[in-house]
Image 1: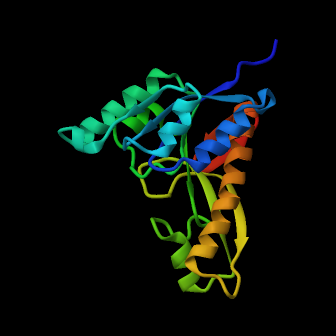
Image 2: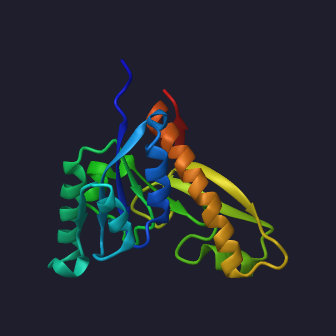
Length: 205
């Protein structure tokens, strides 16, 4: 009997282009995963609309609707956990998860960063890479921890920096590489499993 598809919960904050790439991949049964819910920290965004058009359950937790960031984190944890995910993908989700979330779901949650970690953490990886003058940058997929882009690395893809690059052109090429890396690696994690041993992540049994 074929194994059941891995259950994915995807969290978004905007247009959801990485979400769409995962939805497209999941349409093929051989991919080995299915998106069971999409959550967001904002309402009225295209990322949620993409899920709703396919009949995928959605939920929204806005930080401003809670008395504290801790209350928001606890509510997010409960909502994500209720879908019993095998893997949670932060796909352009612009909030840091916290003390409630990490013990429950941290080792099953992955995020992307538009640089080759540990270089250039934070919001401006492409700009800082360009300013520093590196010849190669790229993107990183990592297991979420309590830092900013500091988690154990699952996958990385290199992107050359061209002499005439602007922040916009470089970031656009990184995003293309990031999307391909995300889809490929999530599929492998779904089909083969993974282990986290300290800072080492191994795909497969």
